[in-house]
Image (cartoon, rainbow, N blue to C red; front, side, top):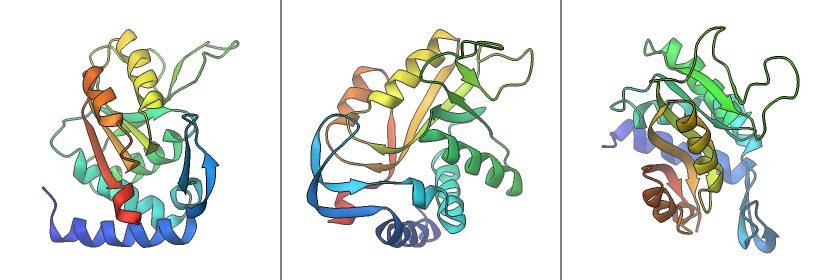
Amino acid sequence: MSTGGDEALKARLIEIIKARSFQSGKEIKLASGRTSTYYFNMKPTMLDAEGAHTIATLILDAISGMKADLVGGLEMGAVPIASAVAAVSRAEGRPVNAFFVRKQAKEHGTKSLVEGLPVGDSMQGKRVVIVEDVTTTGGSAIKAAEALRAEGAEIVGVVTIVDREEGADAAFAAAGLTLTPLLTLTDFK
């Protein structure tokens, strides 16, 4: 349930994204392989001090009932989100640590697929929320979920900054995952 504060934060996030990360008009190829005249390059928003704080605060509110142990997702998009959530969660007295899933395991050192856990710790039994910047088909989050489940994690939710409303919710449902978008493409039309 959104509070008045959440609505004000969402409105501010829309303003930041429009100023820093949103383009419309010309056709652009998306990571999913699809094309669209609406494009979000979320890095300028996620790496902006106010943008990162706003995103993290909204995600913390969205996951407050999920009893998550960890928040993270597939590199690269999830890394700044998860880091911001971890930092803001500590500052707000409700700490949730971060991690990320590599697209492929390192070929040196620990050869880990999942990064961010302390030495000797594992994902076994951890309650995990997957985060991502923009969701089109859900492929990146589903890939992360599969890797995390293989390591024993329980995925308690997926939170995206922007859902492009192109069917990802159905793909998540088929994968046994629940999608919670902070914003949708409709917010930018």
